[in-house]
Length: 125
Image (cartoon, rainbow, N blue to C red; front, side, top):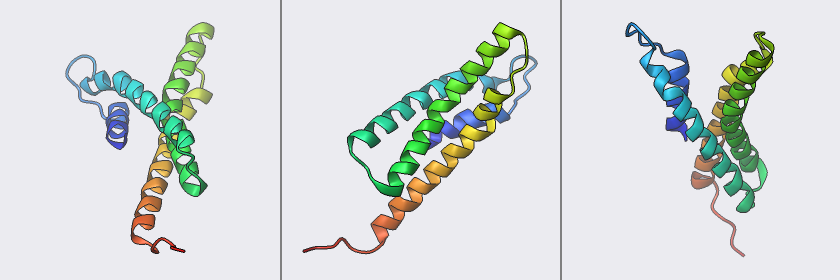
């Protein structure tokens, strides 16, 4: 999921001039679609496996942020197309907020996972 996120963010911000359409843009829409599906899977597995505590919060944040990217891009384009105005709210949610939420969720998940593996041993009774 992190690799797909890096491809999507790279496609949004890296422009390779080739005389026409930037080549990096060709990876944006399929990457966002894959990220959306992975977000749905992550949220579904998090709820089904009954994860608790901070780990659940970080996993849900990661999944919701990856799903929100596609949702907010589509909403921005629909509103801009229907009303003929440049709509800033969904654009701001899609471009800076969702990637930041993904980074916080993924980093928190990694930190908690590493901490639990190398932390205190499991209690036995």
